Length: 192
Image 1 (cartoon, helix red, strand yellow):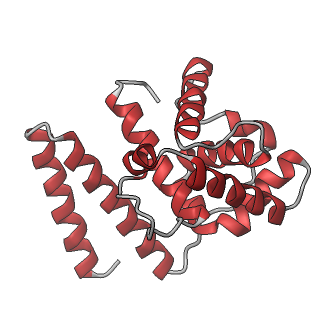
Image 2 (spheres, rainbow, N blue to C red):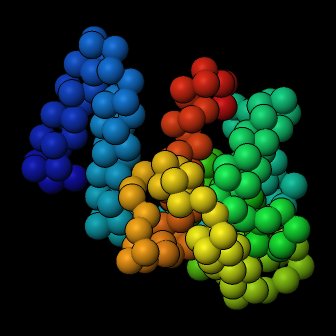
């Protein structure tokens, strides 16, 4: 890590300490995400890649720190959010998107390897292909985008939705939903 990056990390840590002193949780979360992105991208520059998913399919439901109760609560939060977004639960993309959210909640680095690691992992679980997983998730997002309540979509994704707003890509959508779920679970004082 070069000196400029070290200084930036040090300043961010100092700001996190100030946010803790002032009990400003939203700013603290934002700074922690900045620090995580900084360290992640610095690691990529140095040639380190994220480790591939090597766990078994059953470990989708074994997120560290989650009890079975908390996992069920988190899944119910995902279902609630997807329903609010207008995504029907009878389509394959709903199940695939749920698993994608669970996996990226556990390891946000998967968003940078969505086609090489995330889709194949979900495809293996459901005995299908990665391209079908990608297409089903894209289809689910499109259904929600066209049928969902624009106000709900706007509040969940965090930006205004107009007739000219472009539908986000799969990875953008998953990333925005994971951020929303993390924030909403923290606000609800959940142990997720």
